[in-house]
Image 1 (cartoon, rainbow, N blue to C red):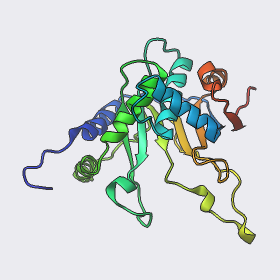
Image 2 (image 1 turned 120 degrees about the horizontal axis):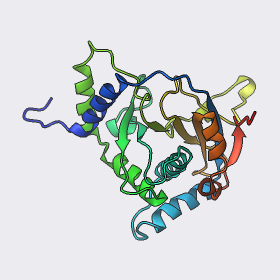
Image 3 (image 1 turned 60 degrees about the vertical axis):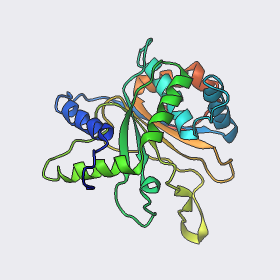
Image 4 (image 1 turned 90 degrees about the vertical axis):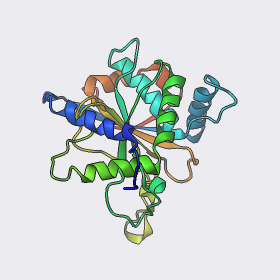
Length: 249
């Protein structure tokens, strides 16, 4: 650590808070359902444009992840019954690029951070995510790593046990995989276990050939909430295609 260095405490406090909250989380058996939704390049561009236009037209708009994260944050909050606010949400990002670490690094570079919005609208949610992502720089993450190293003798909790978790898996390129005879995957999906708390949202690139901004969003929520999510007017505005996962029985 640098002499006289004052650690960036935002991320550290986030992890401290999760440790404390995890000690009192009741274990409740919940039936979760996972749903995969495909968003076309055109739909994601429309999502970004709406988040930008309704905020400040002259400012650079949110990224595809930031716009989709804000969209699902708002929609999921509604299906969970909130009418005047948003559920607690954390974003989870791969920090290899920020830390200057290339893909040969083998290990966990996913970092969580809490997001707070000043309103419950779509543009407010998307831009709150953008602000948090912008603040996650190499110095703050290095401070977090050093703090975690000091706690090596302690059992750290699962970070997905409290909030709704929205993870960006953009750096992961599953379409580089190759099966026998040079066959590449047509579609890819992900599932992270265990699923606890409010649920999870994973945002991954769409297949090659469907546009640079096409995305697949994998949502895991309690079963009844997934059904309500598929009927949400704001979500349906962007015409996602259900790829798999919804069973109404």
